[in-house]
Image 1 (cartoon, each protein chain N blue to C red):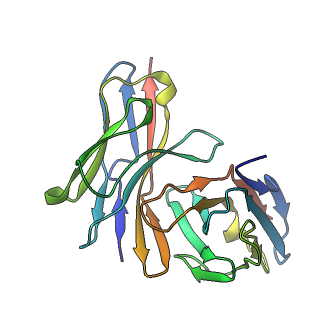
Image 2 (image 1 turned 30 degrees about the horizontal axis):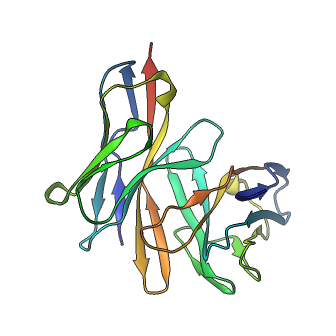
Length: 113
Length: 115
């Protein structure tokens, strides 16, 4: 299917576990983004990528790792999950970094117990 | 660094009434401003955007926004609200830096529509 997808949609994990959230887009967009959404904080940028093998930190990168070996995939890994990482995570893609719409995935609701 | 402020956390309007959601940005250079809408349990959908040209921009679903540089504002308006407009609305400034773009979102405004 065309578009941007995220998996899983819901995830419950325990503190200290590693968890990877997947993001896949079919438009061959250069830019991809990871956000977290928390009540009262809107969306905060975790990491973004301007192209395959190019990634950079956003506003709240601590505790997260990203990679982008292929243009269409942009996985986000929590190496050792903490309760403070309980959130809704959104992936987005865009054809450029300026002036172009970001297309958002449906989100992954992550709960860390 | 740029910032985006949405002063109103929650707004309630009656169906059929007009709506204005406020957004203020802070950055010296020309901003790249967007309004997104998020329905419950959904991702974000673009309503409209501005980065040059006519300062009054039209978007989908009957929304419009006006860029006012003197007030550093990009307020979203709709003349007559429908019950289906109940959602959360986000203003964003997408800034291009050399080879990468960074996004700054406001904290959002939740719109409730009374019948």
